[in-house]
Image 1 (tube, protein in one colour):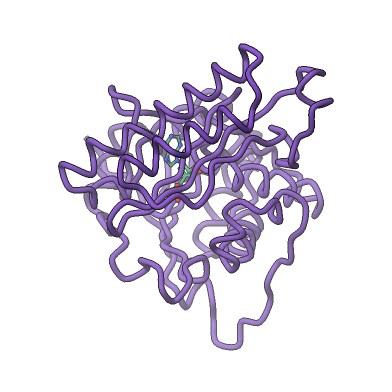
Image 2 (image 1 turned 30 degrees about the horizontal axis):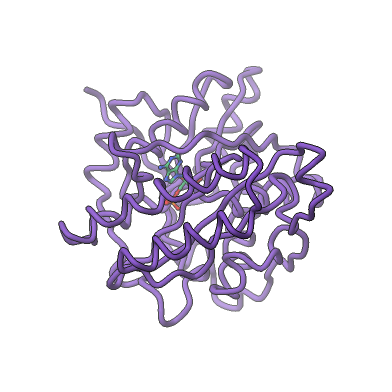
Length: 285
Ligand code: AMP
């Protein structure tokens, strides 16, 4: 199978993408941090359905990790990633170095409100979304794709990026792709490899309890009571729970009784840590 070409500079990236677009062809961008799994490949496939060419960026972005987080241990598996992308039929890998992305004197960060300040991930990782939004903004303006694909797995991130593209007139359509799960329901994540066998087993509680709470809420049960039952079960399984929250699906705002009665789309989001591994997940309600 032919290898997927790799470019490491913005100049080389623009030359490739520009040539495709000059020929009237559309380009999809799939931003990743590598350690690719079937969830990432679903984004590539979704891009292929909507554009002639798919570019996958692989960049472990240091600015979205806090000093206490897992930047140094984050899995880096470039050769395996490249093979998976060849298999999926991706057209180009953009794998910049840290100095290419952040040259000496780099001094600009995107500042965020709206869904980035919903009191979910932002409450526990305050520097995360400014780091994400800045690197995504750079990737968008470096690559200038027609569309970009992001996973619903990182649901708050997806809403932040949709706002970013709209608010800064980036003229890139941001498309969300449903979460790909293991057969038993655990959301695929590059961090799942850090779970011990016992932790892996216990991790099912997140999806199971979200489903239980969502069906109770849909059946008309009081949301706070349903959420509390799920929270207790998650903690009983051995998790340190950061949040389990029911929010407006588009704005991530807190919801009130009127919103519930109006039947507007809602999202249930969870973040919890087991051992050294922090997992996030979410489902529609
Ligand atoms: P990451 O490399 O983990 O930062 O993720 C890169 C992209 O893949 C993001 O848009 C994620 O939301 C998406 N992604 C990660 N895991 C999954 C999954 N299980 N299903 C769908 N998309 C995912």
